[in-house]
Amino acid sequence: MPIYEFECPKCSMNVTKLCRVGADGGEIECPRCRVFGLKRKLSRFASPGTGGGNACGTCSATSCGSCRNTGDV
Ligand SMILES: [Zn+2]
Image (cartoon, rainbow, N blue to C red; front, side, top):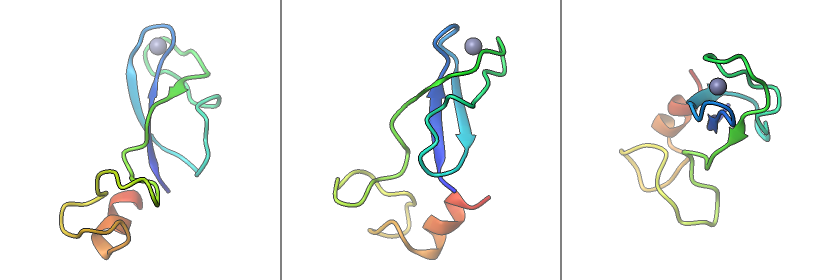
């Protein structure tokens, strides 16, 4: 599962959550003020075709064993 970063619209706290693909934050609860509906920030993982950063530092792709381990806690 991917790790997404969310931001609380109320207290602006950053929350990093492991959640299912496509989660939009509506079901994520802010640990500080207990508000639901956090805003999802850009994924830490590069999407195919975007040419963004790598998920792991040991390969130039995003699908090696280390990459998978990173997203599968
Ligand atoms: Zn909050």
